Amino acid sequence: MGCNECRDQLDAYLDGELTSSEAGVISAHLRSCLNCAANSLEKVQVKRSVAAAGKRYEPSSELRKRIAKSVGGTRRRETGSLWKILAVPALVVLIVSIAVNLYVRRENSRRQQIYSELADLHVAALASTSPVDIVSTDRHTVKPWFQGKIPFTFNLPELQNSEFTLLGGRMTYVAQTPGAQLIYQVRKHEISVFIFQDRGEETVGLSSGPLHTLSFNVENWTQNGLRYFVIGDVGPSDIEALSKLLRDAG
Image 1 (cartoon, rainbow, N blue to C red):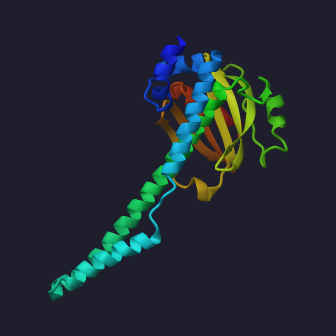
Image 2 (image 1 turned 180 degrees about the vertical axis):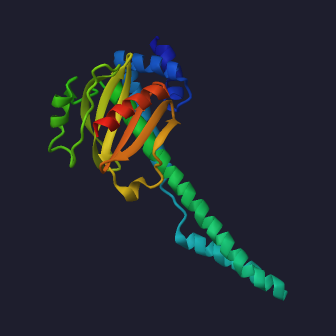
Image 3 (image 1 turned 30 degrees about the horizontal axis):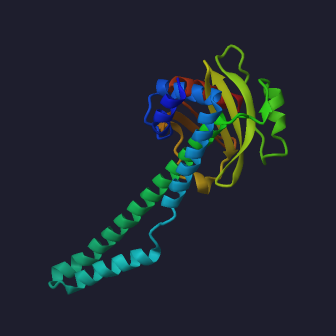
């Protein structure tokens, strides 16, 4: 793939509009071309800034009160005993519906923001000239490197008789929470494994299981007080296989 073709498809790649095979070609080019990698990083930063700006406003409780008051005033102008009896329950239903809708939208937005941020971190790492801080295929070298850098410990799987290779790891942050990012390779494709402490109040709505977001397949789960995310532009079967190895490692 040439640089011109990469530039033409880069926005589609970052927005998740390419197939897994197309995304794999872009990823391979970014690892070998410093100019395109720098362009990718710049676009990722712009995309994250725009996404953050779009999520700054949330309807306030005062706005909900004004809506409820306006609806209540309309109801009071109606006459008839039957309407008066029905008005209060109808108003309650309306307010509850508004509240539920706002809650669902907020949770969906927050969930998408987390997955988008993880996808950005994955792309940024692969586009970097130094995707990992500790370079090693030995889990007994990578795991101890994180001691004292993050407030938890974790186990890594034995990869013998599997298609996966550990490339190394790096420190990372999501929502100002420190965690570990591990890079694995399978058939020249990279997969990021993110591990954080499971902070229940901040992970509500992040239902465990596989999903597809942007150009990537993702699986997440909680285990032993930790939250795991496995993300990459490989097929769901590869994500599932690596996730099983990590679960079995405990």
